[in-house]
Amino acid sequence: MTNTMMRLMAGLSFLLPMALQGQTTAAAGVGLDPATLTQQLAQPATTSWPTYAGDYSQRRYSVLDQVNRTNVKDLTLAWKSVALTAGPGGGAGARRGFGPPGFVAPTIVGGVTETPVPVPGSSSGSPRITGSILQVNGVLYISSPDNAWAMDARDGTVLWHYCWTTRGGDHIGNRGMAMYGDTLYFEVPEDYLVALDAKTGKERWHKEIAPYTQQYFSTTAPVVVGNHVLVGTSSNLDQPGFLQSFNAETGELQWKTFLVPMKKGDPGWDTWGSMDAAQHGGAMPWLSGSYDPATKLYIFGTGNPIPAYSVAPRGKDAKDTNLFTCSIVALDVETGKMAWYYQTSPDDTHDWDSVQAPVFVDGTFEGKPRKLVMEATRNGYFFVLDRVTGQHLLTTKYSPAANWATGVNANGNPIRDPDQDSTVAGSLVSPTNGGSVNWQPPSFSPQTGLFYVGLHQGYAMYYLTQTDPKQIMGLGGKEEVPVGSYPSSIVGIDYRTGKTVYNYVFPEDGSPTGLLTTAGHLLFSGDGSGNLVAYDTSTPKPLWHARIGNVSNAPETYLLDGRQYILTVTGDTVYAFRLSQ
Image (cartoon, rainbow, N blue to C red):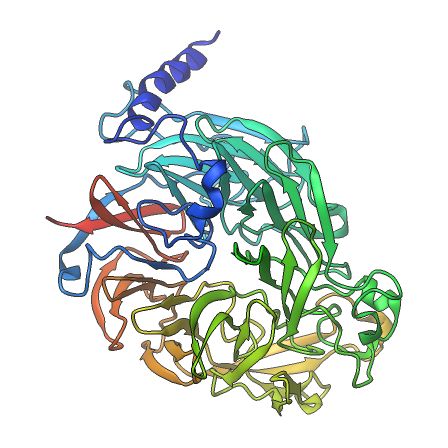
């Protein structure tokens, strides 16, 4: 055994018992109890942040109120991690005396190739962390494309690092991890689901999600429901989208549901110009969905049709709405069978997918108690549905600048204006390709009854650069030129009326990240100008800020040792804040 290996093993034997045991540190060998997992994740997050949005509802609301609008001015830095490094050399040194002198957190290397492709921020250099961070029993679990870390939630000490050696693929981002018992799950860009031992970072198994040679790429944070690991993927080429369920213990495939028709007679097959178009039609589920334990329905959004910018290959008739693209879809989690759907952008021609977070609320609508799901989509419209039946209840335009639709039909679906498609001469359209909102998560506060979401109102000229439909593939055939925008803002929408009743407008160069609301009447977000900011949820004004650099994920919160922490990331560095006293 080499001296280096002996030092690493000694470091682990010293560090892990300190970081992973007892009430005052993290509990050894304790993850999420599989027997009570659904019950745990059906409740608002408190002492932990155990899944992508904190709980199954995707409200990103915490009942913690130790930090509140009265004392938030006393929020101060609790700790700052070392700058994380991706790749096989990505171990990080111990901090504040933890571990023996010279201890380096071990890096475990996985993958399916002996000749990895160098990808900056994945195989070496500084990663960009944009996804959710899990916090379970005092340990943080962090991911970026091809990389995962465990970190002590009390002081930021890195416990282990895992690196997948990649063959390539699109490394656009990674939205986070999932947990079941003491096993962690995350996707790597070249389309594998990887299961890790949460205590050591060692790989337990990996399973292929999709063939990366067909230009699929995987960024989704998996969602665990019972023993189901629900996994989405994406592709910008002409491929079909699908959602899959893998067994949490063995990794075996349980079911696979295509989100476009694959043969004549499948639901929605007659909404495409041809079966060939449908079979290559997109509808990629590349963000995490929400789960309703009462109905056992997993509700999520689907991506745009492909090709994205021309209807010609997909069918020109009025019936050619291209199901089930740009839709909110409910599947039975045990079987993968579709229970209902609602399309937010029929026959989309601007790459405005509808994968944004579907948020669950049990509330009153038109005087009656309803189980609701609501979504602010990339196309500038806000929707409220009955989450049991999929019945449409409300549609409103939350982006005043959105000009691509002539109105909405009787079922609340926006009606696409063909004159606002890409044209040879150019069409002035809002939103831009990035949308009124993109992947950045919204938040719902039951205290105010408001759905908060970041809003970007930009305009662009959409030019058609290819008129032959046979030559249009994927995202090709158009050129987009941004021409101006309004200042970005955080808006609060009353879900009962669809009206915007809260509007914080950023300075011209500001733009919100994902959001978090708490029972302390606080809303947290990055502002795009290098600050983490706390706002009042009732009155749109900032109450506190810390200039730490551009926040790259949605802030989170948890309670540890009786103290509430606010957690966020700036690219490769994790920051944790708590009250000074």
